[in-house]
Image (cartoon, rainbow, N blue to C red; front, top):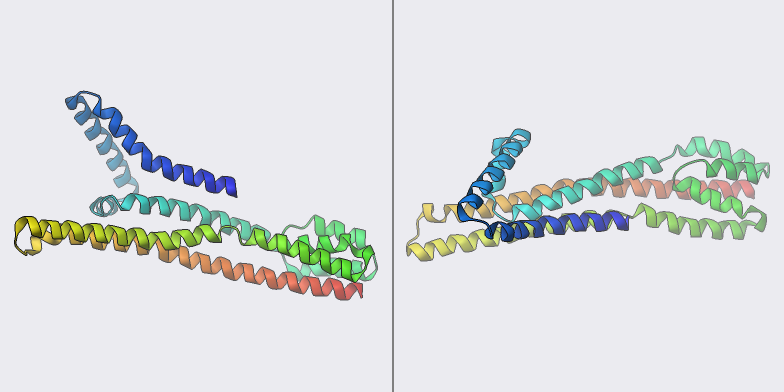
Length: 254
């Protein structure tokens, strides 16, 4: 998980640094050749983006100014964690009743090794804590409960992974939008100062940037917050299943 976070951070840093490096390299070339290459490259990239996302969305992105680029990085970052978290939680789910129907009869018959083997071959945190408890079955109930408690702490740490990254996107999305808003308003007031008059056409460009970046920040944060809440609910359900499984296994041992 940490490696994945470092990779995403590295991609973000490269995305921010590479334009500056490319600009420095192109500045060393001849002016006419540089201009031609930039126009061709930008035109090709823009045409591809319009083909994939539509001309309206591309124009909206361009009108938002520089703040749209870090917001785009946040979109990719958040989407990657949403997909990963969804797959991880779906893989961790298990049919609790079917699982206990296999485990509890064996525990009642003191067939701890057979029950532990079934738990070992079953995916998910519920099976993991039951397996940890069954390994200590010969030590008595206190040893089983202690083993289950330790295993539950480890499994909870795995279940909670990814929430910090999603919270980061939820927080930074609107913040980057507000930063773009401030930038747009500064541009609008600079235009007023330069013109020494208040005219809607003068400040329209700056205000448009302000509104677009604010909109983009909210568009990023709202869906990520929605999925974050869904994931929290799924984790809570798994915690309840872990508690139920623990109670059933301990009762069967008694």
